[in-house]
Amino acid sequence: MSGDKELMDDSLSNQAKDYDVQMKFDGNLLRYFVTGERSFTASYRLWERIYSDCEKYDTNNVHATVILSGVLERMEIPLIIQKLISLNNKRPINCAWVDHNHASYLDNVIGERIPRPDSMNIQIFNNDEDAIEWLSAVITEPSSC
Image (tube, rainbow, N blue to C red; front, side, top):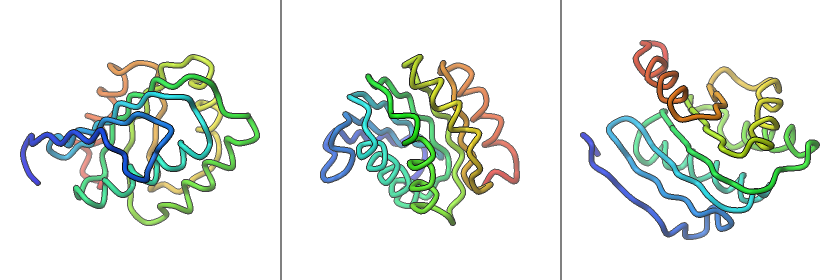
């Protein structure tokens, strides 16, 4: 797919059932808007979908705006990151993750400290403006893909 063609996908099939996910493919960028009740399983399924969509649309660039209620248990944070690493240990990804829930944003910042492969270039933000600025800079770098 090329250009600014948009794809909206509100039906989640068997993936991310606990979250309402809207995805838009925009040139070389996948944009997600995610709402729902935060859970370990739904988070895993969401990332399964993100990695699958990256393959399907042949892009490594993701901007996710997340408005989820609730938080994960602190001990689940390292576990979910290890699961995400096992999901995708080959394809590089640049992801600006915007969490609008203050409590879970702080948990995600803690999660950023957990070692992960260089191919998982995920930055956590609490506003879309900073996320877009960071992702734009990363996408224009020759080594980002």
